[in-house]
Length: 377
Image (tube, rainbow, N blue to C red; front, top):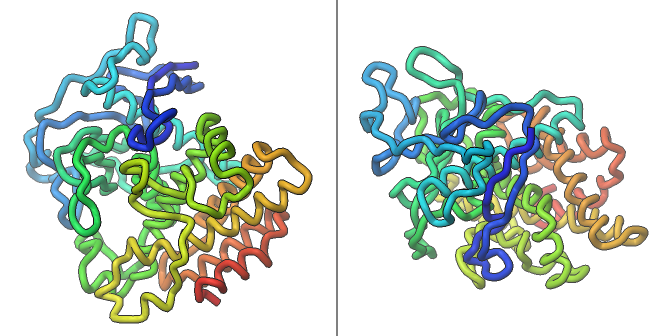
């Protein structure tokens, strides 16, 4: 059942042609309900500052209910024709429908990749129980900085400040940010957590970074890679990529710059020169987002190698699709078998090699070379 939305396929801050929303038609097997909502995800535009980003069941206080009292904006209604493409860009109802459409679009892609490697559809890592909705809750317009995925929710905030960032404005229109946070939820569902992590473990605590530094960085990389692969399913993105980068996909471009905050700045960069030698100090002092760029850089470079191999016999657009789907399937296969316990980037490489072999992708040499170039061998 096709349902139409308007949404941004890249951050409008990247400039034309991404400054205007695209009409997106989702071919779903169900009717989208007001919210928008369905049996797996739902939008709840909460009237509050943020979810409490504290240990445990972040969204839900099982004893006392929602910590912000449950106040929320009304659910967004479809038009008389059952579609959501009548909403006015920039309004709260538009933001709610746009975030829902992006999440549903990305989730559909990754369900297909898991099916391609013999896996099951995505299931959320939280479980329904009294007071806990089993669906993934989407909060599109939090007043808190940044964005986050937690126990049963994805929250899209307003601005990114601190460190090298001084960005204001809501992030609900940033495709990469939404896809990145959903990537966390996808990998949470597939891989769960190391045995030494519990609901009371603080994600970025000194203890957790000491025990699970590479797992935390791996998760950030997974989010970025979900955004990269998913964005390449938008024709406008591929057309812009090839028109501006040509065959040199190794250079910085609209896809490798993840989460554009302007024409010249992004949250992270897949095309980078980072190496493991930069992170030899105390794990507790590591910036896991920076460390994640080592892994993302190696994986992205291998995907560029897959593009170059395909380009010898195929058109540029077809070669992009080949590299995109190779990477999506390899990641799906990797996340389906990789243990979170004692995870290292080398173990990620080995799992990717195994997943590639199952697909007969013939990319082992490229993976070994690209990981080695980053000091992972």
